[in-house]
Image 1 (cartoon, one colour):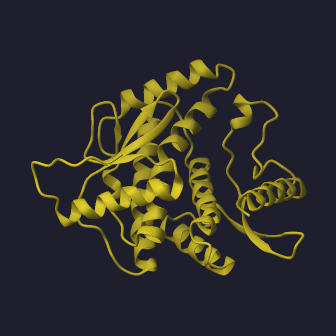
Image 2 (cartoon, rainbow, N blue to C red; image 1 turned 90 degrees about the vertical axis):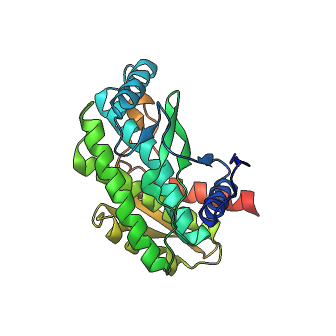
Length: 265
């Protein structure tokens, strides 16, 4: 929930940020943000984040003792990138302007990162292509800084990390159809290519087309990254897991998509 300080009049930047935070919350139903800067104990790019990461790592290790170091490292990475990615995509495709996402400060909630603060300031405006280019650069800068931070605490290899970042963007490009039902599958592919190009992620995954039984076509993820959840939850593979045979993966994704479509109808 956003709050206002009534001692000072809101500026246009304040109003625009409040509107963006409300849009993100309404579109997703789960993004929880407020205006403001870094708070003690929160993760912010460029701050001293060692204690934040070490504490989260220790909590993951205690909760999943058999999972192992690679799982804990990956969870640090995915935990701290999901909110920036969601916010960037919502800013570009729903809000129509880009706040300074690199000022994002994120809160730790037990084993997860959930909740954020953003500083008010001028928002970048322009065409969708212009916004994607800027947002992509911002996200990649945040990811590169996070990778350095994580490797000061534990070990996370660059290529698997970038593949997981790609997976997040692919999932959002698939999800974009939910937020913007009017866009075509061709537009999903085009936007996806622009995001991956802007973030330097070409070749780390992509979209593919799945034919449904009623003749409809939908975009699904063709991932190269693995979240390693099976290390903590044996025999539990994501529907889109690249470790699955293609026919099995497509079958699982088809089942999930049909269930979502039925629920929405």
